[in-house]
Image (cartoon, rainbow, N blue to C red; front, side):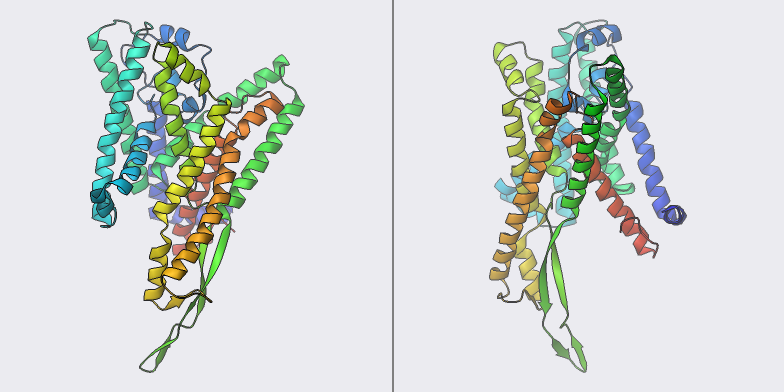
Length: 419
């Protein structure tokens, strides 16, 4: 392992990518501690004292509780990405752009950025007005409100840019890594909180041991499902060109149990958090009813969370993997699945296999995501930092990033990390 790390550090390109990614992490963490101008820290602390913002505060790295420039995290961009993905199915023009390759994807990415800024502006107005009514500004007025709205919107835009820069010039998926960094940054405070509860006698060592065992089981399950594959055998027909014989070899199509990775968790979490956050800042009985019914740990929250995860698992898998395209490519290059005719029958077979695999992966993700409810009941420890959702994102993003790391090393004939 140490030899592999030394070899990796010798690769100039990889060293630059890792260094750039760490630099962007530093910018993110600094921004999470820069407060919005004009906010009274004492009034804000008094207002937010004792309120639980759940997983939203966890993925923002504590930025929301401090009302920093990154308080809204990357959720407006994620919501805009979801909306654009759904519109591609409905609007033919967007569907055509998605099929035009790199140029079309650039146009869609630009539309997504505009949508993220618009959603960020709407969310910033709601947060600013709601908190402003509680007296958190030193000099309340239109100027303070406008400054806070512009700052929060600009913070979201900057965070979106940081994520895209990590994807382009760093290593790994930038948006996922930002959420990863936010969760990891909150782990020390979670550990301190558990230590304080242990010293106060509100929890015991047995509860902590149960939490550790469940956490290890979740990590093992996430790794097993993410790496699990169903391999479909493919045979290529022999063809003779001149004196050379091409084809004839046997290979396989690897279908992953979880094709979508942690994206369904992130999408479902963002969709579910949006109405909760809006309702929290509206002073109306209906808003209070929505907030209480959708609060973390309620039956409705758990059911909707699980259903959204299953939906987005299928939805994202359908976007990234098209069985008919795979079947057409096999037919074009003389490949076939033994016992099946090339073309549509092969595509339908791959689709059936993928549907069953995706169902297993989606149910696994949904069960792990709602597991914290049972963990809290068993251990009496708030598991937002160590629960299923946080561990799923952390382990999933770490695996995907390590795979990219691995590919860079193997391209240069170095031994990789993963066995």
